[in-house]
Length: 75
Image 1 (cartoon, rainbow, N blue to C red):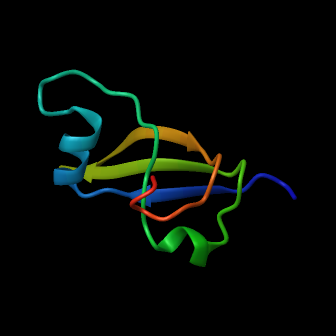
Image 2: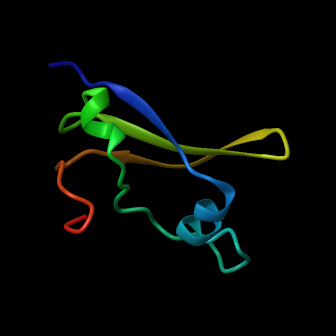
Image 3: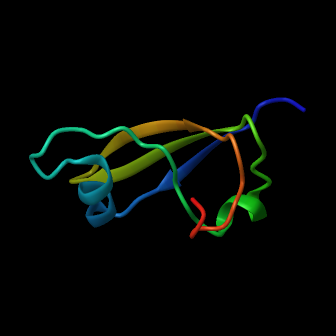
């Protein structure tokens, strides 16, 4: 199956906590969670781009290549 590409929107509050944009530097992203992934047909080796919009500008927070689909508590 061919690689699929998805975006996941994070609110500005999630963005600050998860990406380190609250003046503490950037942190690597190792997972994301949400019930929409299975519904959208996300599979292993697909790519998810994490984005937000702040003051009218689109920001790319990172890229995650899916290694495993699991529940939020395991992630």
